[in-house]
Length: 270
Image 1: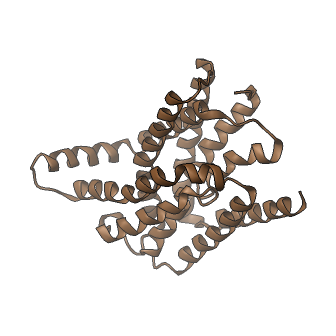
Image 2: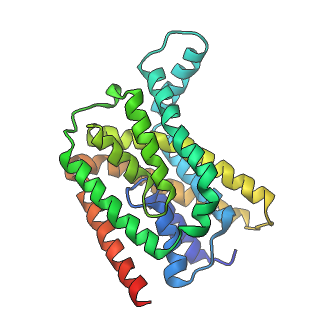
């Protein structure tokens, strides 16, 4: 890995900032190498910053995750279920489609769908879907009203996030809005869904790292990248949940469309 300290800082900050915003972290991590010719950050770095964002979301929703986990354990132990155990089961259900698709399609996406044209297209297309879903949704459902049908709809939508530029949080929030959930409930479920997805994705990348060529990276740099992405992601979750109830998703829609248009121009004139 030939990245310098400045590049590592920028990439760790980008990962923390974009992982939970509806603007696609994978797209923004690809862009520096495409636009500025930066070397690939490598699997070691990817594992470190994804671990940082995983710590951030678990820390922020620790009370929720603890309650859901305990309720789920009690339920599988034979005790009657409640709303927490039901939500835990629905989170597991919603994660299955993307988990299977990621396992089957990961290699194809890595080799065939990481171009500027793909990122530009998905940035614009899914920005329009996000705006449309936010505009037409009644937004009258709370997370306690989530059913297995809703969980599957959102879970299958998450498959689309395998393609760079789509945004995992963006497409799952879009699907939740279309199921008439309010903005905060949609974002909250999307963030809770991130826990198993980021964990499994990080595990897969760790296995790739162990089975591939040795990618050495100094431990202090790894720790720095992890901590930076963690703090940025934690702050991002906190302020995002506060902002969307006041301003909605329109600023993110505008950003995605502007980014997409700029990338289209870059593709056409490069």
